Image 1 (spheres, rainbow, N blue to C red):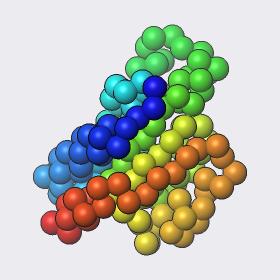
Image 2: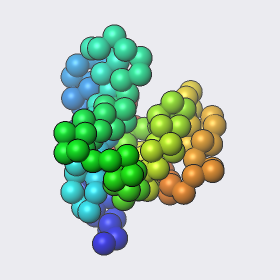
Image 3: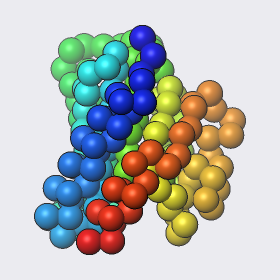
Length: 152
């Protein structure tokens, strides 16, 4: 089933909610959700300050949530790869170079993001790490709302 523009905005609103949770925790306000078959199956927010771990970006938090869940379900590597290839990520800010590389490696189907990341963007702003992958990128989703959260 193809997601509509209304679906895209709805899922981005959920990512914005995660970004607000990050902001409330004095983190850089970035949030994301991962969707499979029109259902949110994972969410994440920046937790780098809270965990004192610079790799705990929203995308990594959501990916780890899924990997933990799928490991408990006993999924094989092939099954995990197949599931990621059916998932869509909605994230408030363009994934950084680290996260863009991770998304490319796991083979996520699509990435929607709100605003560019002019300092660390890995989806075209600084580097284009998605160029050799099959993932589809869409930028500018709810850009004004996302930008207002980042400016708070």
